[in-house]
Length: 97
Image (cartoon, rainbow, N blue to C red):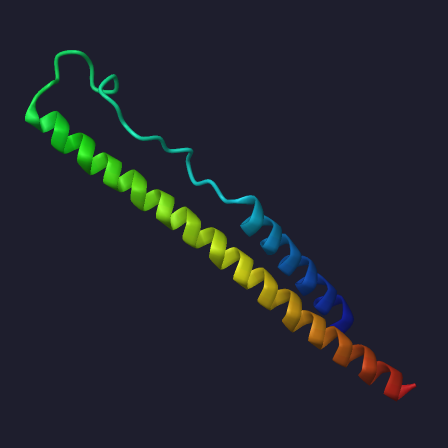
């Protein structure tokens, strides 16, 4: 049973690594421009709103990069951890024979 758990753990690690390398996209955000609010909304409020929403989008980009890096690190850790456990389980099984 331990061998199955180790293989499943390694598969999860590989999947996590692939997700991290492939990139995780939260919602496909885009930066705002003057077309977003319509033609007659050219005031100082528009500039402030545009700056605030662009900052939020930049924060989303940063979180996406962090999530990708985390998934890569988690995938490498899981693959190594369960790989070591798999080798230990195989060695223990051979000793018992």
